[in-house]
Each structure stands twice: as C-alpha cells, then as structure tokens.
Length: 92
Image (cartoon, rainbow, N blue to C red):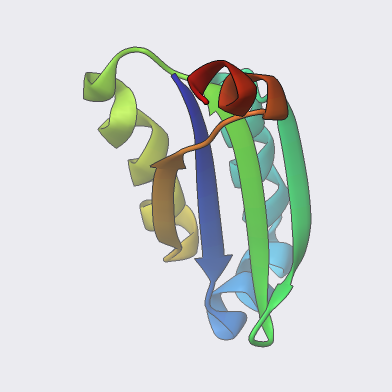
C-alpha cells in the first residue's frame, strides 16, 4: 500500500537538531528506511514539515518508522493511504 507520512517538527527542537546534526540524520534515515518514492520539505505554520511517499505492506513496521522521528525530533506524525492518478482511475 502506498502511504503518505507527513511530519512537523517543533521550532525549538528543530533548531537544536539542526545545530547538532540530528535533523538531517533523522530525515535521511527515514527516507532510506522506507525506500521513499518521493520526499518533499516545506514550512507549515512556521514549523519544519516533510511529506514522504512510500510503499509499505506490513503495518507492524509503523513503530519502526515513527519512533525515530518522535525520539529525535519530537515530531508530530500523520500517516494515510494515498493514490496515484492511475490508482484512482482503476478504482473508478
């Protein structure tokens, strides 16, 4: 199943993580671990935000995916299934 993981990082924690190098490490580890199909980064409400699209068929991996972001960055995380345009057309 194709999933979209959206995370936001509190400003203070993000600033600290950027200074000590853990920000880039945590994001790179996530992208590598899930074998991201795409990853986008922006600001949302003045906070660092990322969206990572990936395939995952084992729901038991959610803690493995989420916990490093929680622990390293105090991230808020949302995960939901997403469709490509082709997926949508097949479903319709």
